Length: 120
Image (tube, rainbow, N blue to C red; front, side):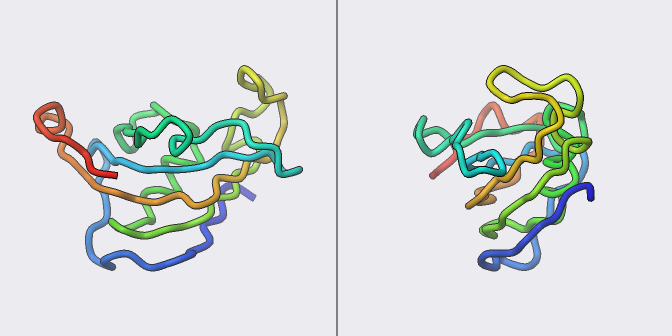
């Protein structure tokens, strides 16, 4: 399956990230049975990572690359695009993961990001 990107609401339709850029998102991660395992919203801090650099699961690198700024989507990641056979603390191996209400806030060039503040 890989990763399925289901658009919830459109963003600006123009600003897509490039490999190496820092993207900023809010998200809620759940297991297939609906149990929440993580949420940037609960922490009150958006999550940032460099796209295509292996800092996140493969499903995020590929799924978020398809999202423009301001877009909301639901990502469904098969185990091979999530934590696979190794699992992750609190997540058993071979589980399908769902990231609902994934919201692309911004894109920053990595070398500039440390000087910027991200809004929520």
